[in-house]
Each structure stands twice: as structure tokens, then as C-alpha cells.
Image 1 (cartoon, one colour):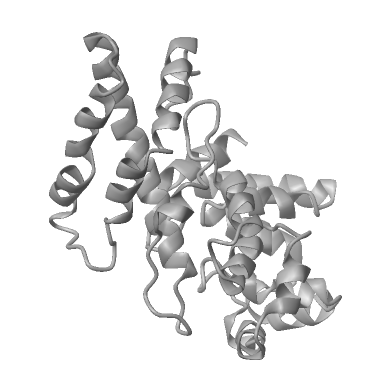
Image 2 (image 1 turned 45 degrees about the vertical axis):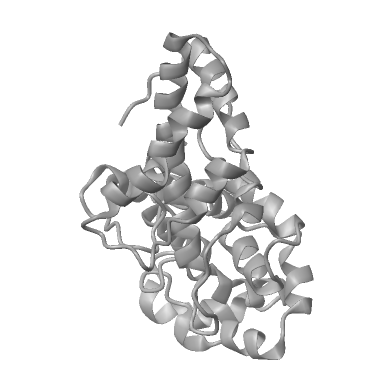
Length: 275
């Protein structure tokens, strides 16, 4: 884990690199990596062939000095891998039993937002996507729930088909420890003023030792969801914050985090520790 600040030179290179992620050729190569059809064993080779091997040709068109071209290629390769992890994570998250397989196309990838340090900005990208017309209402609702975009959630809820509303109100899916990213099953109760019912539904497995918001905060931390963790942390009292910070920090520093498919990429856990 690296906490060294990014130099001004690196920031300038990364800012230049973000411009390349508006190029349709690069976005098309990333879009063509279909996580559900790939072999885990051959992933590295497939990624190099599909994405990385095409970068030098695209970057050479810029006519930069050789030393700068090489630096830019290396930087874009690293950033491409970030995009790949972001894409894979969100394709898996937005997939559910009511949909067919989904793959992010160029129109979706064009909405990517970046931090000044050249990292994919998960929160800003989510806002761009829910404000756009490149994904349907169900996916907008799930994204808004995942990132606690409380201004958008009621709007998308009203637009959801009834079958989806019934699915998201299913009482079997409120245990965040099992359904690692199950906030879409919580928010219907929150926006309809039924938090007391949600407290009753979750009491059997969270116990009386922690509150509903403490439970949501701790589960968000365990899954690497920094934005949701920040949201629920602000709902806690000072005493609850102290207790929750201690237990969550131990989890982050320990070896109890399992990196299964529906948990945020590892880089997001580093962001949580810094927070």
C-alpha cells in the first residue's frame, strides 16, 4: 500500500492520459474484454492482446518525444487496468437474475471520471451515469443505492417497473454480510420512511449491540465501499463513531477481507484506510 503523494510531473502525465480515454479505439478495446466469457487463467494474455498491445500505436500518433511517449504508454497501461477493474466490478454488480448478461459499451465508458491523481473516480462516474441515458432505470437505481445518491434514489424508485420493486423489497436480501452490496434492498425502506421496519428485519443477525447505521457502516467498510461508509458514518453519534472506527480499522488492517467478485477492487480499501 503506497501513501506517497503523486508528483506534479506524474499528475501532468496522468491528466494527459485521461484525455486518451475519450478515444473510441482505446475504449472499444476495453469494451471488448467480456469478463463472463474470459478464462481467468488466460486473462493477462487476453488483456495484453486486446488492450495493451494497441496503446503504443495510438499514443505514437500524438508525435511526442520518445521518452515522454514511453512514460505515457506505461501510465496509460496502469490506468487501463484500473478501468478494467472498475468495468468488471460494475458489470458484476449490475447483473442480477432479472437481466441477461451485461457488458459496458463505449457510450458507458465515455462517462468515466478521474481524480487529480489519475485514479478512476467511482463516485463522480456513478453520478454521470445516473444523469445520462446510457443505462436503464433499474441500473440507475442500483448505482444510486450503491453510492448513496439520496437525491436520485426516490426518482428512480418511482420509475421502476412493479416486478423490480417487488424484487428489491424481498425480505430475504437484507443481510449485508451475505449480499455484500445489498443496499438496493435497504433503500426502498429508507426513502419510504420505514427504517424501523428495516431495523426489525436486520435485528436477528446484527444483534442489539450495534445500531442499523453502525451495521451499514461496518459492512460498507468490509466491502471497500468508501462512499457508502462515509455516508453512514455521518449518521452515527460520537460514541458510535469511536466504536465503529476501532472495529473497522482492525478489519482493514487484518486478513479478514475476502476479495470475491462483488466486493470493490482492492485499491478502494486503501482509500478507506486513508479516510
